[in-house]
Image (cartoon, rainbow, N blue to C red; front, side, top):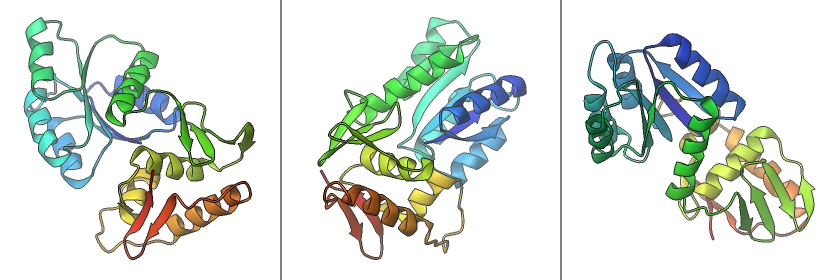
Length: 224
């Protein structure tokens, strides 16, 4: 999933980026209010981590702007402010969580995963999908008890479609969330089609994958 880290402490920002990339997140960095606002206008994110104490603007104001341009994102406030009023204000404005500095990076990841479980109504890491099951935490795909090998990108694509089940995702949306930012509206690629073909080929060796639908001229959908 895509994460925007808006943090003016560059050392902390780079540490978060490094840690989250190891957990298979795609990360963008912004070190100021202006940089963060620009990225939010251009791109769609799954998570936005906002430091309240930005040098050129107020984090609460940026949160308000972000909710308009990225309404589907999950927001976590990062701040050294310890006042109860700040925590309440952020949550009242629509933040999903609040993390006081200093914090441990595994705690940040755990909170992000908890938000994802609530957002996508996933009670457990192991999700049934037709005759298969997907372990989102361990990044495994199983047919009964047999593990099926998917490449990193294939798993990213399958799990992202699964989390957005019953929703048609365009090739551009899938490309942005799997490979990074594409701001060209005319962008098209056969990468997504090739990976979908490979996923079907591998899974069809075990059972049909009629739940993975092609929506002609648009993109793909997992129908459950």
